[in-house]
Image (cartoon, rainbow, N blue to C red; front, side, top):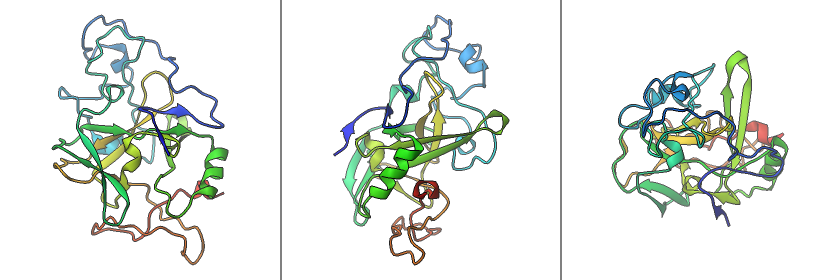
Length: 254
């Protein structure tokens, strides 16, 4: 059974502390930083006046094929208020979310109120794993296991590829109940706060209505466990573009 954690923790084989404060803080000395804040100047503004992510489609790792603008919030060393306009993801969800039982997919997560497009919904939190540990756990996953080991890939400056692997099996938050859809209403966006270890933040790709199930894309490739496909998990998203089977990261099967 998964123990609750509001944000990522270090798992087996991962030698960094996700909570360690490494980035230098700003000295703005105001309740809410403006565009002259060093944290914002570094890569440009992240959020609009309503706290919604700018260019949410471009920020999603689902669409990234080349280097894109990093999203960095103010951190614990910054001299600004806790409700600074550049502190969105770190302050957690502000919309009420509810775990419920779906007809075909086990548990799911739905919105208890309308959520505007580009709003932060929740973090996908869990243990950050090494690649070796993630591959070991993948081999042990049962077909009916509800948790999903998420691999996020970012293309950084100079073409450097950064992988972050998150598993909510033993430590996680409500994000672990979010199911896949081939036409999702959430996007996965890496957001950094205290250091270079990203939080995987889920933002609304469009307006989400009260009672609507929350979904994100597990990936583009429909992976197979065996050549005949007997162990592939069927997709029950019901979208017009459904690919019939759940995507899976092939690198975890090595």
